[in-house]
Image (cartoon, rainbow, N blue to C red; front, side):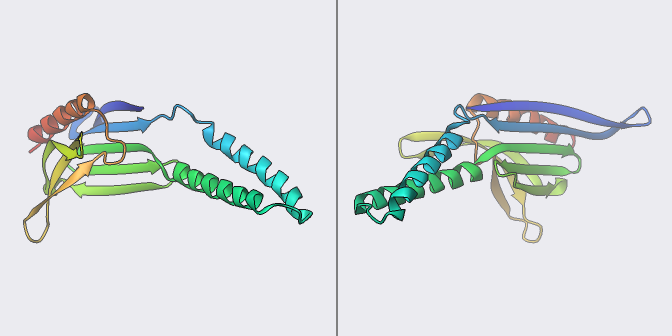
Amino acid sequence: MEQVQLVSKCFSRGGKLEHSCSKEFTVFYRSEKPLFGLLSLFVLAVAVATKTLCLQEFSCPPSDVFFLGILVIVTVSYFITYVSAVQQETLLLVMPLGLQMSTKKRSGKQDITWIPWCLIGNFMILDVITGQKVIFCLAVTVKEQAGGEEKTLILFRNLRPRLNHLETIYRELQTSLDKYR
């Protein structure tokens, strides 16, 4: 379940309104089962403790060792997936400086990408068909510095907000882009 937050700010210096304004769009992912990871770690600890007692006596059947191995692999892979999952994506448009995209993971790691204002093309909503599913994405065209070619960058590529949120964000971004060009 995602939550979308829209924030607009204009900066002023000494009471005078500057030409620099920003719009921030943040998509949060709220897990409905936040304690599931802790519960699985507790189950793993109990299983390891009981199997360790069994292994110390060297009378443990091979099926118990196999079960313990599978349990450890599943729990560790779940923990790695849980920690490396994206929790928040933010898009910050600072007029007329540029566009900043940031992705924050549950582990605390944050990836930031900056696109200067002169390289920003247009924003668009793309519909991508995968199998029998249609996914809507917000994208921006970015001009290459040297060749003049344009490439398309997908925004909010991990959390993929719903179409109604994308339309709201698109209108705000495109209006700001048209106003400050």
